Length: 256
Image 1 (cartoon, one colour):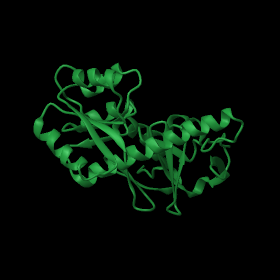
Image 2 (spheres, rainbow, N blue to C red):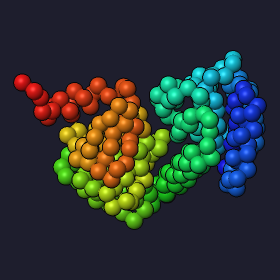
Image 3 (cartoon, rainbow, N blue to C red):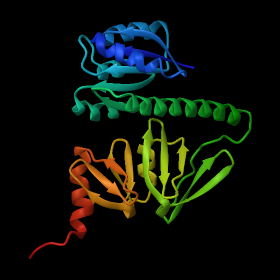
């Protein structure tokens, strides 16, 4: 059971999230707040696992709230303004949802948050095992710049071929590798650190939450890219110019 808090200055929006939460047995609502200051005050008295927060709130916005917290819980931002998404991801929010909120989209964000919390538990257990002399689980090994790299799982070291990787998704302090075999591998390494270790000729950052394998790139559209499995990956404005200059223009057929 994971505890959660709702922060939104609109009662109707809070009520909708409450209805959604009642459908998910693994979550327990412990507080409702109408602004960031109320949330900050509550968290000084009691910690929670997940905060569902609006961004644009009076007094203290959702993003300013995260900046003010020393050890923030998992945040899922919910807003009517998609332009806030980039700042939310910069603050390592686990997800950003747009209003009006749908239950299927809400459930997807919840599952992502719960998966992150479960991995965090494993990380804590791994640290305890390491302290006792046991082999820790889930720690990634330094990848090489060749055609494969290794990750650490609970059974040992797993070899991953670069050509098998479709894309990698950020999960806060963790990352999730998606492969052509329709398998996923969770690793206890942030996307930022992976970006420094992966083969830069094959892997490219297209969003705060995504790195794609250029071998599987099919199309670059206005706001997303398409991969060989027909997967749409969001393309943020901050990375759009880079993929144009560093990838497309180098091999673009031009008219003379």
